[in-house]
Length: 133
Image 1 (cartoon, rainbow, N blue to C red):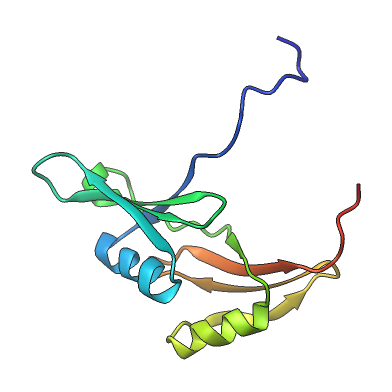
Image 2 (cartoon, rainbow, N blue to C red; image 1 turned 180 degrees about the vertical axis):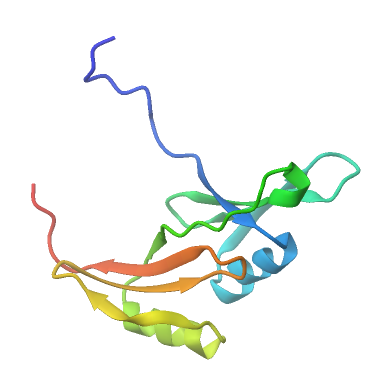
């Protein structure tokens, strides 16, 4: 197979570790306002995962303890695209979310960082500069 041919056709989901699955579900649903699409697990046991839709990729919360996975928070942010970083930040602050530092202006985008209840790093992001072709 030539090196220029990609086997990958897309991203189905991104996994996010959870310490307390219900607490994380509440955050992604009630605080971030994401659409819950499924809860799954083994028959007769507690839920091991829950999925949320962002419009571009599914987020899969994983109940690490139920899956036998050692919990380790993700410190590389998942960047949520928003139209207005300052407005999105203000809305989450009104819902009790604390942010890490001020809004960053990189010269091409604005972003601001926060964490979910399990300590996973998240961010709001808005690119204002056009992409080079």
